[in-house]
Image (cartoon, rainbow, N blue to C red; front, side, top):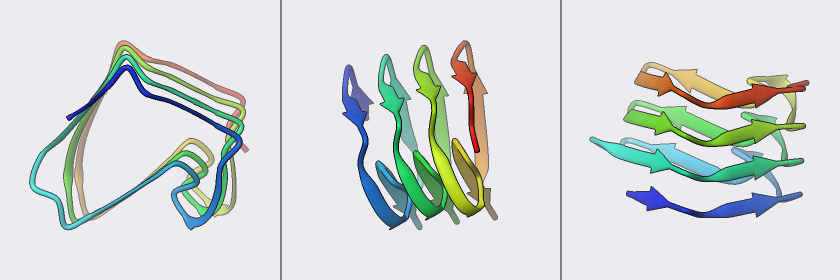
Length: 88
């Protein structure tokens, strides 16, 4: 689980803040992802995984090829009670 974590203005190829690949269950709660950049998944890149994202802020993130805030590929994602805005 990831709780009460903030990441601002990080850059990477996949998931500017977090890359989740082949992970059975992950909970992200009460986190902030602001101004992150990546080729895919500006803040979070998710592939072949299950995730719950709740009570978090995901804003002003940018992805060159897809998933401005969150990229979800071949995964189960439950995204609830979040503030998500300005994803590019």
